Image 1 (tube, rainbow, N blue to C red):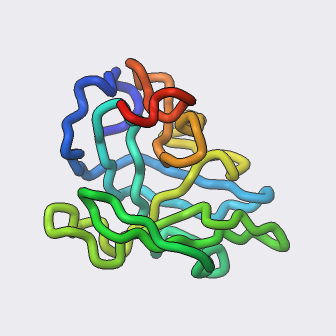
Image 2 (image 1 turned 90 degrees about the vertical axis):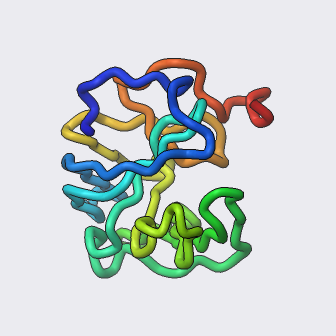
Image 3 (image 1 turned 30 degrees about the vertical axis):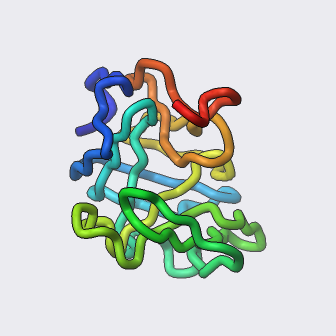
Length: 159
C-alpha cells in the first residue's frame, strides 16, 4: 500500500490492524538522510493516520540511541521503548519508539521503529511529504490520501 489510494481513518479497525507496506520511505534530520526503507509495517487504528514501523537496519548506524526516561504502554502492542534520533550534533529526543517484546498479534513489529514526524526535517513516502498527526502524543503520518476526522488535536483525546 502506497499513498495513492484514498483511505478514511473512520474505516480503520479497533483493535488496530497491522499490514505490510512496500514503498519508499526517506527520513531527513538536520539535513542528513537517516532512514531509507522500502518495506515495513503500518498500524491502522480508528481515527489515526497510519503509523509506519521501519526496519531497524534501515536507519543509519549513528542515527539511533536509547533514550532516557519512562516507557509507555499500549493496550494492544505492549511496552514501548524510546530512542533519540541523531544527525550530526542535532538530537531529536524520544523521536522514535519500538516494541521490543510486542504482544503476539503484533509480533511482526519486533526490530522495527516508528518515528514522530514533527521533529524531522522531512519524511517522504513514495515521494510525498508527510505531515505529523495533530498533537504531541500520537505518531501517525498524514498524507494527502488520508481523509476523515483525525485524533490528536485538543479535545479529541477520548474519542
